Image (cartoon, rainbow, N blue to C red; front, side, top):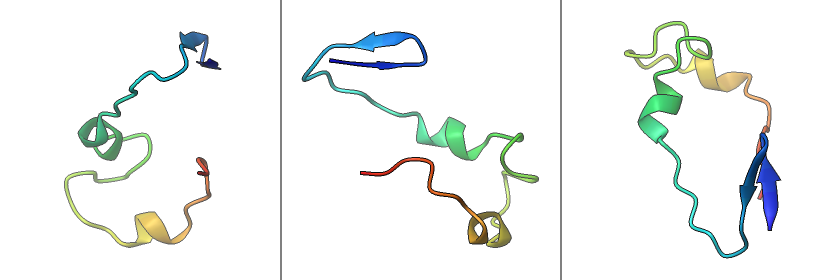
Length: 49
């Protein structure tokens, strides 16, 4: 079992991400509808596997 942002996630659960929504986040990317490699040059590792 795990918890993320207050949500309980039971062991062996399948967790899906909405990649489209993540990459269209205007808080994260200045112009999400265009490819700007500078957006990726200074990324910090937020998630590690």
